[in-house]
Image 1 (cartoon, one colour):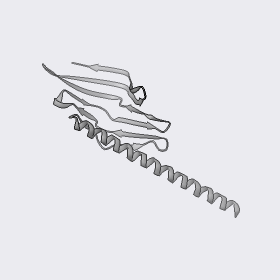
Image 2 (cartoon, rainbow, N blue to C red):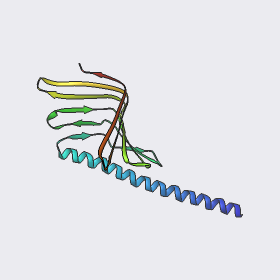
Image 3 (cartoon, one colour):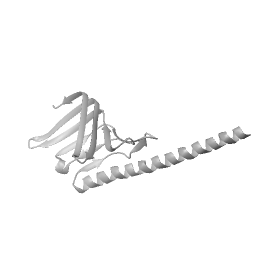
Image 4 (cartoon, helix red, strand yellow):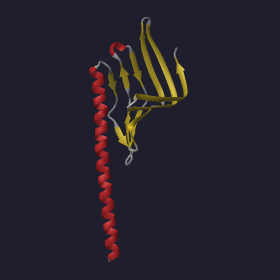
Length: 152
């Protein structure tokens, strides 16, 4: 009887801990979604249009990963138009000051020039970036691997 009570207590404790962890993770994921939306709204206020499908979240319990399908960026006056593959934004519990981005696949970029639009297509097997802010300022570390650029 005592061993059944011990196992039941252990199971209830683990369930409570798991439930609390899930609630905490869900709260942070909701905040992550709000920050993504706030960033898009701030850019729109400056004339840049950022669009994407609603974020899908994963990564429980130590990682928050937002996946954005059909991302695009259009600068004012059509000076720049970018459409890319699925974009993954990752925030890790052990590195809260850093945001990692990953978007392998085909990126279509159109630049408007005086003689007309200049379409570019970049395909990369690996396209990653990490951004962070510290007392030294804002930083960006980007990497492309197995990339091909078509600028016809």
